[in-house]
Amino acid sequence: MNRLGLLQVSAAGILWGTGGLAVTLLHERDDLGAMTVSAWRMLLAAVALIGFAALTRRARAVLDLFRAHPGRTVLVGCGTAAYQGLYFVSVLLVGVSVATVVSLGLAPVLAAVWEHLRAGTRPPARQTTVLMAALTGLVLISATAGHGSEGPGGSPYAGLALAIAAGVTYAATTLLGHSLARRTDPITLTTATTTVGGVALLPFLALAAVTGRPLLGTSAASLALLAYLGLATMALAYGLLYAGLRTTSGSAATIATLLEPVSAALLAAAVLGERLPWPALLGGTLILAAVAALRPA
Image (cartoon, rainbow, N blue to C red; front, side, top):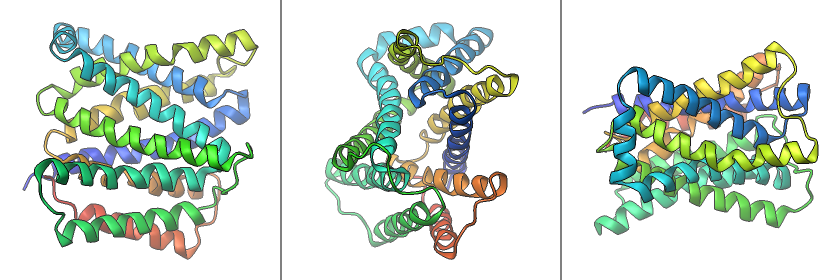
């Protein structure tokens, strides 16, 4: 049984979990908006990946991917960008806890339902047990890990709708990316989809400029955080995700990426001194156990 794919997807989830703290620090230090940070994150990743693709002679492969699967490649790239936007806005409207539980929790359910409907099968008891353990852990860690649950926007129904849309987008993007990952080099796929996503988010930088909002950090530390977000949590993390999807089902991948809130909670405890109550620890343990029990395909 090849578990390398699951390890790669799990590593992607852990890297994504470090992004929340970086975004928070950039907002507090330089008043950078979440969508501005998201746009820089994808654009910086795209530039780095295009350069790497050129150095490793993959530029032609990237163009060939656009020619062979233009619609699907654009959909995966735009879906990656859209998920970030929908999630961040839902956080502002309904709070981190609800947005995380709904968006991340809905994705593995939808992915599993789609896979079994397409195959005409019923989920085995093992898969159902693993999924329920992971979702229970997600609820526990999101509700108690010190992130706060109230959204400042005062629009809980709109926030919930956006969180649902984020979960649907995340599941669909993972499933579409899964089919491309099975036939495409992960660096080629990551370069193509990240470039599409970066272009899709360019209007948010233009909007920030027009409205007079900050566009970039003013310190070397802030610029380093932006670089980290682009290189580690985008370029490297999505490269790992697509590499892992070559041997891992979409539903298993969405469960493995639930390590994101676990790593975020541990990082907040280590760096910000946030206390982890016992329900959060139990939730993290359940997610870790669920990921350990996953089967690659």
